[in-house]
Image 1 (cartoon, helix red, strand yellow):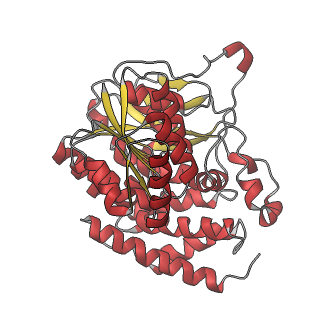
Image 2 (cartoon, rainbow, N blue to C red; image 1 turned 135 degrees about the vertical axis):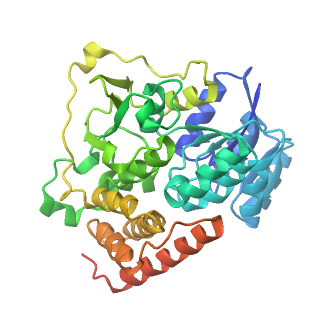
Length: 395
């Protein structure tokens, strides 16, 4: 029996995690469910799974949730705010933490879980993008087990040698291929991208995701962040990480070996597969996902990404090459720009301009050595991005 904390239980990853857990009640117990503002869904989750603790974003929502749970006879203790998230990540009884809070907000509690030596199911890619060196140093020092949940990184993890030590020269690995669907605008005329709106950008052809990550997929910044994440997870330089557009989203990523062979992980596009893999690792359990029918799939397609169509991808490669605070700046500017796009303050193609200008304004500098330095760089980048947006004409 594993005791779990889910950071971000009401998001798409959290909901999928609970679906896998629901199928294996003899193996997993929910100790803490943490959400931001979706109080109705968190209430329903607490009634079903009866965790010991629940955390939500603010005091008013916490009071509402506590009153409703008490009326329903559910004994779950309710807390709120960032400090409560840190406590849930560090609970001594917790064996594994699903880190599924989207964006920079997920970094402090995820890092707290790492420092407590937990098994980390990492769905929050921003933690490694913002604070890769700090994060991985904490993993080494605490002995935490780090298992990737992103379908691409989970596929690479499964396709690497079982004794992979992070040393390419000693492993027979020559490079990584990260697959990308290309999002909803893979074939859209470039001139038409100026006028696309949030609903179009969030209509992903293959995956059901939250609005922020859906926009990231549309710009391919999601893949850019995954390049940086892969660099830190697998100790692979940027020049050995190649993005491959694969519209069917059946091949989830591939590992190239020095003998010329390529090993890949295939499956239907459903996040319950990597979640189940990480939950049960090194065993395998049912995820509720239909087996892949190769005869129904029939054919697979691959193409190189167009950096003119997807400038955010080029910006991510640049940030990784620049090092220092550049990846933190990239992530912060992207979060600000995506929210501005979703709020109707800027157009779709302005997202890349906001990021590029912010990176130009803030030099990369030396490597960031602590969480405090990471959070300072994050704040500076958000201010610079907001300043640019304030001057950006809406187009």
